[in-house]
Amino acid sequence: MKPATLSGIVVQFQGNGRKLGYPTANLAIETDLQDGVYFGFADLAGYKHHPALIFVGTPTTMGDNVRRVEAHLLDIPDEDYYGERLKVILSHYHRPNQTFKNTEGLLKAMLNDETTIRGWLS
Image (cartoon, rainbow, N blue to C red; front, side, top):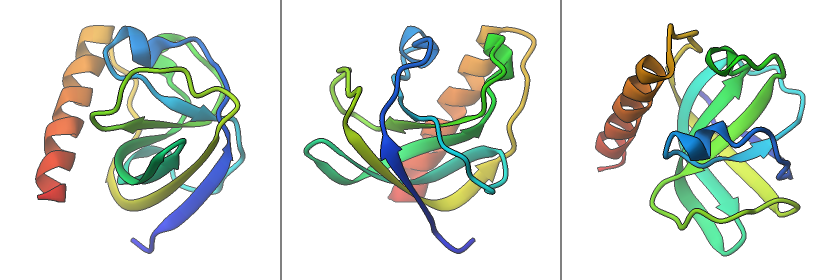
């Protein structure tokens, strides 16, 4: 895929990623990108071109109905970045958005996503 860039100000949602061990910086922006999980890079606070798992879509497994962009920057401290500018570069489409039966299924997929992006980066 041709890399796509999205940017905006980090906003707060329910914090479900953090509860699952995958804190995210979220953007409430419109995009024509296909829903799903992407591999890419992010600029946030002092982190530049940092590897990131990026989700575009509606997190229906968590009972949400608001489409968004969520970026999980690998191996950075879990801090609040609300109000900070976030830029994400989506470099690789990994998989479509899915609704899982439970959070265990979602967490298993997220772990697989993390393992796969680490291989993609090496």
